[in-house]
Amino acid sequence: MPSRTAYDAFTMSDIPTLRTDLAAAFRWAARLGMHESIANHFSVATNASGSQFLLNPVGSHFSRIRASDLLLLDANDPTTYGGENAPDPTAWHLHAALHSALPQARCILHTHMHNATVLCCLKDFEFLMLDQNACRFYGRIAYDRGYAGMALDADEGARVAALMGAGKSVLFMGNHGVIVVGPTVAQAFDELYYLEKACALQVSALATGRELALIPEAVARTACGQWNDYPTRFSELHFNALKTILNQQEPDYQA
Image (cartoon, rainbow, N blue to C red; front, side, top):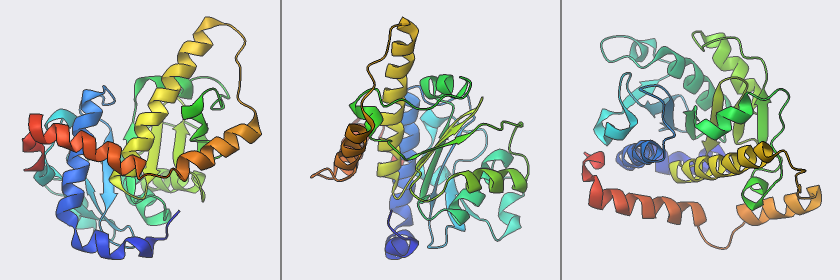
């Protein structure tokens, strides 16, 4: 994963682009049914340390979020967590801790998307190397099997952050949902998209009750490397295509 300093110039000088990209991620998550009521949270860091970040405001539906709606928060300034326009407390405690602790967590996407959450509710479940999409996540998934309620204090955010070590981009949160992190909004959203696709296939395959044809570990490792070293800027091309559609159909997301 790139270091924090690799993003210094981009994150410090291009906050309007970060706002637009994150707003686009909200809109597409809603289109794909990955949202839940006015819950769930996406954020992106805007400085090198990760202490400052954009986050969706409390009470906003993913399908209506605009770039200008996003809150600019500072984990080192508690006043940004108070007042009339305060963020959701669970979002604050999780995202502030993750951005500050994890260099790979430039963008954080937390959802209760259906198929991934189904797998989070299976006892001792380990993500299966069942198809090509699943191989993308080989060795990059962490697990939280200690669900203890909502993240309403800073200790919970720190506990969750400690579970995601170097090289991990996904956290399966037992009885809860998932967290996906990435170095850019485009890469994090592409990960979220393919994770849910892989989870949907696993839920369907498990439902058949038939023996599963798992991909051998060595092949899964190779395929993961191929995903992550793909010869085109796959994630960015995908996300740019999604923004082109939004520009035509929902241009207000940029406002």
